[in-house]
Amino acid sequence: MIGRGGTQRDAEPLFVHVMRRFDDAFLGRLNFSGGYMSKSIATTAIILTFGLISTAQAQAPTSASPDPSAASSPHQRSATGQGTAEAPTGSESTPGAASSPHQQQSTHARMGDSASDSSGADPATFVTKAAQGGLTEVAVSKAAAASSQDAKIRQFADQMVKDHSKANDELASLGKSKGLQVPTSLDAEHQAIVQKLSNKKGADFDAAYAKQMKEDHAKTVVLFQSASKSTDPDLAAFAKKTLPTLMDHKRMAGDLPGAMHSAQSGADSKTQ
Image (tube, rainbow, N blue to C red; front, side, top):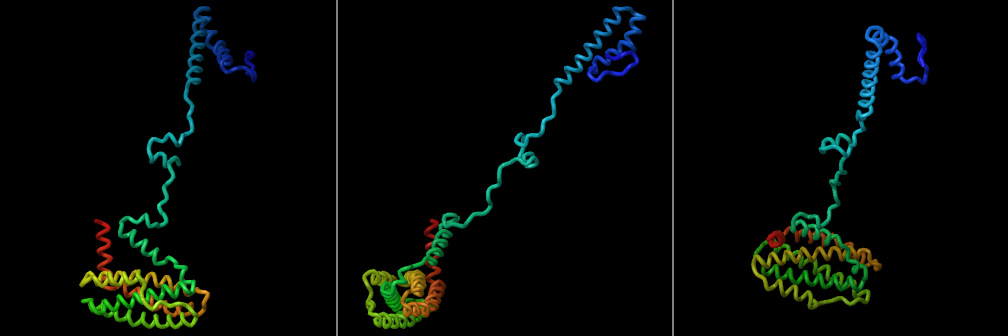
């Protein structure tokens, strides 16, 4: 309670304090001039006014912190830090991810060239495979030198006959010194390759020969790379010495006119 001219007590509500001041300052004058009824009406009006003010304050909404997920647009969600994670922009290149059949073929071809042939590490297996490959190179290249109408094909074929005949003789001598059987003629599989190629004529022959040389030298390079790690030091030395020539043959075969023609034809057939 507040005494006349005193101070407000700590526990006294603001409403009671205002009513007391109002009673002292204003309602007393109403009682003097208008009587008891006027004072009662004014008191009721003051009570109603404070009640309405208290109700309005209680119903007023409070400001809530913004919810990032409630943003209505991507720009708003970005501003509030809400949004989906970005997808990765990079990915490892795989053969299946190539956008065209030609790109997939090129990718698999590069992977095939780098594949390892562990059979070259075994001395007997290496001698057999290398000898059959070398005899095939000489046979088809002799056919190319005699049948091709392209000067570059004939020049390449002559070089193949010379280089592979020399390598075949060295391999045969080395294999025999170790008691290994060295083939001196083509088996059925390689004889069929020579026969199939010999049946072609003109541009078809050149394309088939170039394709065969490119594929054969890719396989032969891998075989000799494996043999260079052979447990037999003499065979390993032979493989290491021959590898540069074989790699040069592989590069030359890829530059042949027929090789480029056959590659383009293969790409066209894949896309049709």
